Amino acid sequence: MKILFVFNHPAPYKVALFNELAKHDDIDLTVFFERMKNSDRKNAFYNEKTFQFKTIFLKKGYVGKENSFSFKLKKYIKKHYKEFDLIIMNGYSTFTELFAIRYMIKHNIPYVFYINGGIVKKDNPIKYKIKTNVIKHALKCFSPCIEADEYLYHYGAKKEDIFHYPYSTVYDNEVLAKPLTREEKDIIRDKYALPKNVVIASAFSQFIKRKNILEMLEIFKDRKEYLLLIGDGPEKEEYIEYIKQEKMRNIIIVSFMSKKDLFEIIKSTDFHITLSNEDIYGHTINEAFANGLPTIASNNIISAQHLIKNNINGFIVKDKSSTIKALDNIDKININNVLNTARENTIELSASIHYERFKGLLKK
Image 1 (cartoon, helix red, strand yellow):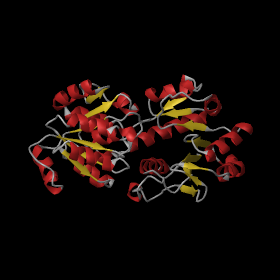
Image 2 (image 1 turned 60 degrees about the vertical axis):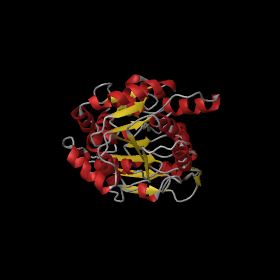
Image 3 (image 1 turned 90 degrees about the vertical axis):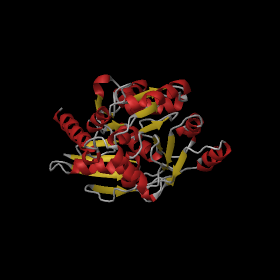
């Protein structure tokens, strides 16, 4: 089967999925990337350098952090759409995507609409009409979980037209085989000069307002646990100033790390915490689970709603009071439950399910 997949940029988790899909002998995959990279991502973020599939890159027409304005995709589809069995559009947030989708709708060219997650917001009438038009004309929709389906329903999708897939950024071999011992954690802490004989929480993300890290710091101001903050972003200096002002000694800030180093250092911590005000999915929870970390997460994160089972592998929280309660009980979580969830959400499993979904579509 010949597949054209349109995605914004070569994010490593997407490249990993595409590489796994391309291993199937009967898949001929072409990916159209609208950008070489997003402007707010460090080059080190793009750590999947090998493409085992055909690629087409837009090299001009970049707008802002993620947008693009080009007719190249539309022209490519116009010329080549008959060569593909499936055309998959991962979103409609760029001008380039909208130009192409509008052309396909006008000329009755079937396409699959694909989301990585979604949160319903109040749109102005024009945006609502555009989104509804895109989704209602899609052959089928792909969604990572039932919690994200509400977004598709809001714009007119029908339940029977939605296919699910596990959304993962973790390979099978990156999931811990068993929980680390305290001695094994201490060896890693020595390597990174982290304190021993203390409980350490990890939080890794972009340092931006939406991630709500200042509220997290306010909570840890009155806690005995340490907090390891990993990342970079425009709010970093504000965090540092707050830590100094409050004379906090239990906060450690480390700059953005490669995936390999990130996974090593967080293995040495005791749990993960993310209090984001909004994540249309949220990769860090599955990554934390893969490294044996029970997780405390905001109910505003779609992956928290999907992956976390309260008192089993972590806690979903909604305010400061419930976060403090979760912090007081996080040590009671069985790590094997955490790892079992991670094993159910790997890149390999995701690729396998995508493959079956694609085959099922083409039989109809």
